[in-house]
Image 1 (cartoon, one colour):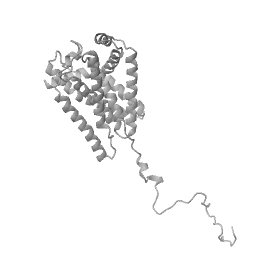
Image 2: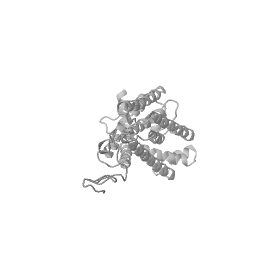
Image 3: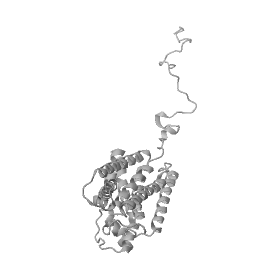
Image 4: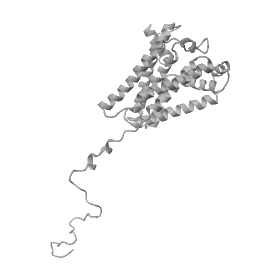
Length: 311
């Protein structure tokens, strides 16, 4: 049952093909799949982080281009379903219509003005925040991206907890709504925050370059933002849908990246006092003052030259 849940999580959340996909899953399998969601996010985040670091440093594409490619990789690995859900939810909630009409708008294949603007701004913010984190210090971009991927899938686990209804009797929302016990997202959140804090401490202790003190706070901020959107969706639509789940993932990822990128940048080692190489200063040795140097073999004014004449 446990491995069936993992296969279902991979099938629902990624484009990774499986030899034996789960069909007609039972409720326990669905609950296990939603519990595995953060682990799937960890794998996706690691792949996207490899793209970020690889294109920035060895290939020299620059942090902005590398951030854009990393965000594109995440969209590719998820078939863009989360982004599509974000656009659909923005159109539904932005319409101001009653629940039934808003759900009908979300079901359409086209994207309206609210969805278009929301999608563009979300991607711009994600790329900008990730680029800033990448330039803020070694490893901060990769750490922020992995944390965002895990947090975004953890938001799905929270949204599928018991007590959260489905907006429709059919669809993905009806399949996963209310399947997860509350203790599971609580335990997973504590583990994620602890892992983020431990990564910051270990990085500062071992390498001397912290990953950013905002990393654990970014997890909490991302989940809080997703919770607000979920509450609004349940109030307006009567429950969650597959589009709502996709929107929650993107909202949590965006807020996590923004908060993780905050904090002061690391100062270069050359600014710590003593430089290396040709710019190194030696103790007890002063450089000559400007304008006091004399050409080679010159005699200082007021002294006798070897010929006995004043210069």
